[in-house]
Image 1 (cartoon, rainbow, N blue to C red):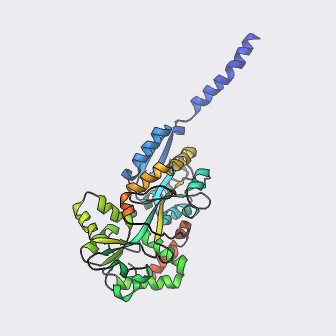
Image 2: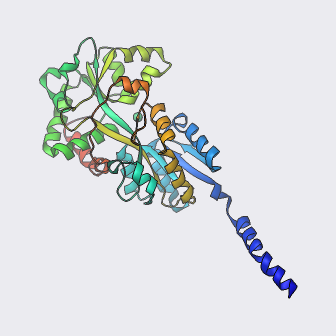
Image 3: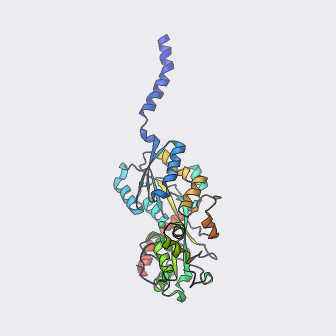
Length: 343
Ligand code: FE
């Protein structure tokens, strides 16, 4: 009788211990595949580990390469979370079936509807703007207005813009298709090709350098590249950046083209709960401020202060198009640019 009672008392403790012992170590870790460079994300992940005790294993790589890797790993992928840039790439991951929908009150409250996939496949974490930069000594800001106006005769041979294989341009063109339709967008693409100062080459920074070097007078680039050149250590880049002005296109219309960096939980995530916890951490106020500021981007969370540099560029109206649309119209955009002869 007595023994029986002792057993009854001790049994729950034994069971608890058994559960504890058999709990896999993976409950305390989360595996992140990130297209963002280590220095743009690692300090934040370390902070997450400090706060939660969850170890973050970080794999960094190029966005498209990480997606290929996820696809080839399939169900056996150790990855829990994919962090990548551009809604177009997030959509590709979605289409490839590597993401799973998650629901989170926090994420749904903090991340505006237009900046996330409606079923929770991915969420925007920062906003980036595609702007016009101009040579301050040759162009007046008053001469600029919208993306549409870039096909004006007066810009003939004066525009630098990167290749149509670049996802940022694809997303910009996708936004135009949504906004103005296929025909108008194709005509615009042809107009841009006509006005190019040179065949597309290099990245966004190279377009800014080309404007500074006098190879062209205006360029279309993501604003954080200008920010990186201004705040970076490379003196030549600082000098180049100092020669250009930043212009917010379409302030009278739909607003400057905005895109996101974002993340989604992997279909086969072994540590799903921890992945969601990390996502929620990434949209917390402090994280948002750091995450946006370190790359000169804009927070997706309302009411978070932006950096001094960003403040110096002034407030702007951003296009509030659904980010999901940029992905949906990506294939169309590629075809349109192709037909226009945009290399
Ligand atoms: Fe970029």
